[in-house]
Image (cartoon, rainbow, N blue to C red):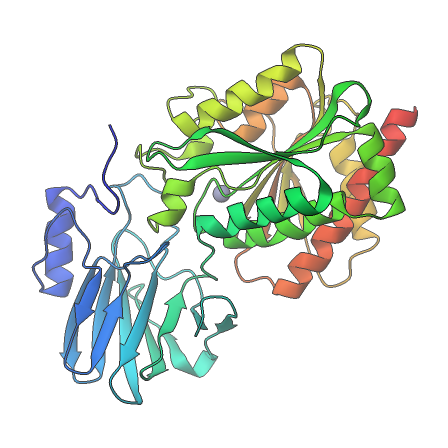
Length: 396
Ligand SMILES: [Zn+2]
């Protein structure tokens, strides 16, 4: 079943909770996307927007209710994103009250939704009850406020198209999301020797923007006209699906696609159109072609790589341990750990790809609040060391 854009499934209990905290009545299946008051307007009717309800507490004090797209269980990734305009320049307070979760993402602000800055510490007050109060300066120009930089789905497709043109790559529609948004892959053209590939996927979880902020420079390093990257691309093909959950991204979801499922718990059941595309695309590695490495970009509190354990044989062997060591020797301002996790019956991309194809399958997690330049710098080093190790593996 396809849900119309913005439709939210909220059960009676949730509505009761929303009403209890907000005191405002609003349609139970439709978030309040435009909240207009005497001087202030708060909107979330844009790609990635998320506010479920608004209430005015005084001339300059507003309370926003932030709720997930589905009932629990749902990961505590309480995404919020809104823009404020005001008829006059003034300072306002905005309470963020979360349903099913507590404040997590430090607020970021932007005038154009492209250049972003963190709100100053003095303008953010996090309460014991899990809510947060932000103090923001508003005027006639829109001010965006969100849990992370807002990267709408278009960001990913625009970037991928640009990469395809600049580096002569294939830009191919794999299929569509549940809400009929096209999902694309980028793929190098047939110069790689005999079908050897690395496969990269991102944005399964909509609020995990820092993972996307790593995927982009990582990929650009692989496609660059450097001797290392040119040598690498002569030996290996590269397949990248930069954003697998367009519906979640566009609708400002905390976690799920439009099928009320966590896509990274569906690699095995494959009940969702998005994960089915991955299953079918990877099936090429059951025939003549070979998968050497699979990377899935995400975000969490720390910078961390979830990998196979040392006892789990991968081909190439010990890739994760060697990669971690090589990168640690080079990066200075990006603390990270490798966390080996044995295969479990949890249907994640990592478990599915490793058990099905035997390649190292690594979840590349970037901290929610990691310095943005450090994310980029580290991703370049990760990409370079990955290329060196895989070239060495081919030489052996
Ligand atoms: Zn994730």
